[in-house]
Image (cartoon, rainbow, N blue to C red):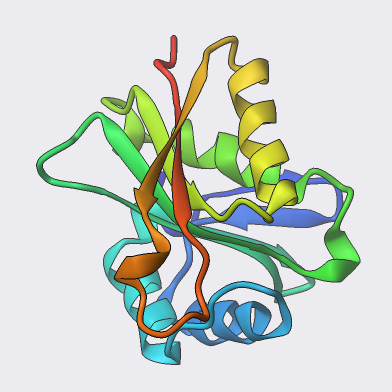
Length: 169
């Protein structure tokens, strides 16, 4: 899919982000409960990892995004770093549609698994990834990856990896 290609769904479009979208992705992350990274991270992801990131826009405003990447040592796994959806779009299936868009891309043609880390209290993300596994007629496995002790201070809960797949495409 080229950067110009978009899919129109309901009242929003899905596409690969551009570096200009990075600021909107950061602003949306700032409005949500996501861990906020620097604006540079979002601009960099949109520029250098656009094939494995998704942006949802409504009237040219970022209302959802996914940042992700394929690790060079695991070319069959897409790691989803963040999924953000504006509160005005919740309940419309935006996150699920972005995930489906992501794994259908040419850049993911060799991908058989999707991974994301989620804290125990993030039930919305857990439900999203379980739904993806169910809808794709595959399984998921949960393992603790980053225990609380690896984070500085006591402000971050353990992160559990949700591994979905294998996919049959």
